[in-house]
Length: 349
Image (cartoon, rainbow, N blue to C red; front, side, top):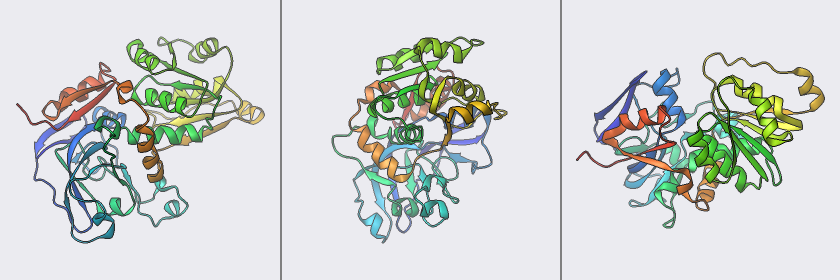
């Protein structure tokens, strides 16, 4: 099979590998398509962290058809050959303290597709028994397109982040970030009932896509007082601000525009020095809340698939690349010439 294998910084190779085989309780999928996530791009351009089991097949936003069910295992037996499925990217152990309290996204023994086990940027992918037993494999309804099915992970993570930021009906929400995650936050915030959603970024073309999805947008130039520009555009302070870019300055801007009693969500890892400066008196006297948000639970992923069925995937304006053009997909996404790259498993011509 063809697979996109990360071997190091700026070293992503399309390789021929043996097709995986299902062990007891496992599944093998024939992958239809797989989204390229911002974490895939960061790992490609900046190099893998210690969490990565390099060489590894990247990709965790995938949908495919079950072609093999491993011997025995009640959970696996419930998913028949021929079923179209998508899979939560993080696989909890189910036994650690975090899993027992329902925070399986914080599992102490987490396995992640495309990080420490092979992911979905390949023609076939093996689904471990642990994933099947955790309920992380979701059978896709006939009326849910592949384009919608691969949105489970981005929608699930944004749903978790916005809820941790206490977004409800009538909220005023600011999203700092003009990438696919910024767009997803905007769409999900609208679904949660937010009355105003403002997306802020540097790329006018990307913000135009986000604007078509129903959000207000603000283009800021490098060196601009971002917080001042946001306050001027809003005419008030925000209930929730999501910092959805890997830059500590986004968090510093976020805390300057939040209202008293509001929430700031640190969404995604930070590049370089992650240190930020906060006004401790504003934190104290303003009673605002600063929370982190990482990944999503298995339950949130399943909820996200239901939500994806109510959304029009065309709003996300994906650009498709066949797997033999995997390098083009990553370069286009890293160069910000496309908003969302999706890799299809079409064989080379």
